[in-house]
Image (spheres, rainbow, N blue to C red):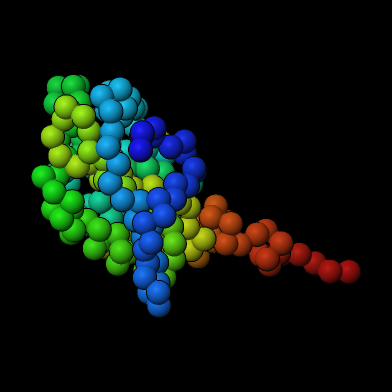
Length: 193
C-alpha cells in the first residue's frame, strides 16, 4: 500500500479486523504502512500547526497523553512520534519495533477509554530507521483530562493548560466544545414585566 499523509479530519480504515468480537474499540489500529522516500521527505518537511505536532521518541508516554488530550479538547489533530529535530534539521528516528511503542499505546488507550476518537498507524520509511507512530486524534464531545489530571487545549502549535478556576471558565470551555449552547444558559439580571 502506498502512503500519503491523510488530510486533517480524513479517517483511514485498514480493515485489520480489530477489535475482536465482544471487545470495545478505543483505538483504531490502522496497522503498519510502508512509506516511500518521497512520503518520508514530505513528512519531515511538515510544519507544526494547530492541527499537527512532530515529536522525538524520547517524549514520555505521559507527555504524549497531554498532547493527545489537548488535540481532543480542541479541534482534533495529528501527532508523528519518532521525528527528531536538531538545529532546525528534522530526522526520522522511529522505534526499533512496534512493541517498543506499547507504553504510548497503553497511555492513549487509558486516556481515551469509552470513546472512539483516536487512530494509530506505524509508518516504516524507505531508507530510514524505525517505525514512526502516527496518531490521529478527533475532537472530543467531552472534556478530557490528561495523565496529570490537568486539562489541556491546543493553541497554535502548542498545548496549553486550562485553569478552570471559575464556573465561567468551565462554561466557556463547554461552549467552545459544543457541549453547551447559549440557549441552555440562564440569563442573569433580567427583569420580566
